[in-house]
Image (cartoon, rainbow, N blue to C red; front, top):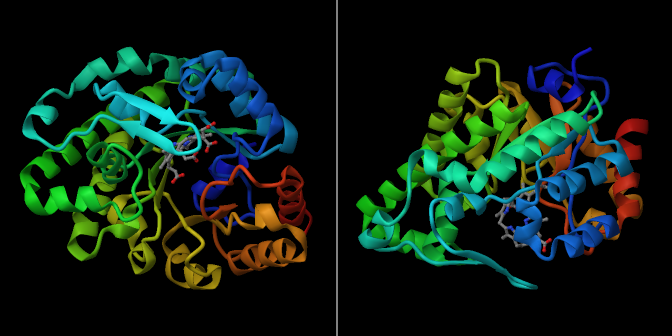
Length: 342
Ligand code: CP3
């Protein structure tokens, strides 16, 4: 019996959508906080294969999600290319910037990324050994544009201003960075698949700030190249693309990139997505993560409405973005019971 997530990704309409949740291993869970404390800090947790596998398994044990997502971070790849990365508690990631030709030239390339990333592949191997056989293992990477926004600014930004500025002022350098990240992302994801990832997801969290042709060049095109390369090496490998906040650009994204599934954020309605996006393939999403904080009748009715609106095509139930640390673990159970129990 094929795993439910793989069936949905292959285009099957299932009576009950399979379910997992972005950031399902995270700070809203007391068992995650305990393991992170044992590891010391977030990056030490990412690079400790045993403990990273453990936190990946925690939400599977607690809730029985249909998929597990590898525990790691999109910013490990730039770190493997040579930038310094650290996390400031309560604020987020910080890294040394890449905005000049000299800084770009200092980046590594090719096989060298695996020296840093080997523990991540080991986490994947441990998970394939330890996951229940019905649970699908998802590997992931950031999309080149989203990763570049952090590398150029040295931190998270509200409007990705520094990356847009570099694109305007030195397009050659900006495009060289996107290309380097595209290459490295392919190498990184290929190794995850060799280690046992059954599906890969490409997170383009800041795709929505790219307008018009910029969206096509720097969100769609890299996703198309990455998807094409992965599928040429592993025919049949399912790919989930998440061009967050793409709006109208969600339409046609399956076809333009070759992705099997397009993940939806909660700014689009499920009814609109059924009509305009799901007609081209599987969709994933898109309950607002705030319901995991507030719960109650609104959570139940909105969950039902999404399941209903997307019931005539392939659908994987998920949130529109990651669950937040202030979420109540009981609300996650309520969401799952609602999806599975009607
Ligand atoms: O989803 C999962 O459970 C798998 C693991 C995962 C993490 N980050 C763990 C994490 C995944 C898939 C990511 C992706 C990621 N990381 C994205 C794309 C998805 C999105 O959320 O838009 C981005 C932009 C990042 C970069 C990043 N990592 C930021 C901006 C932050 C700080 C903000 C925050 O939420 O704390 C992180 C830290 C991070 N990555 C945490 C986790 C569980 C929290 C770290 C902690 O334990 O303190």
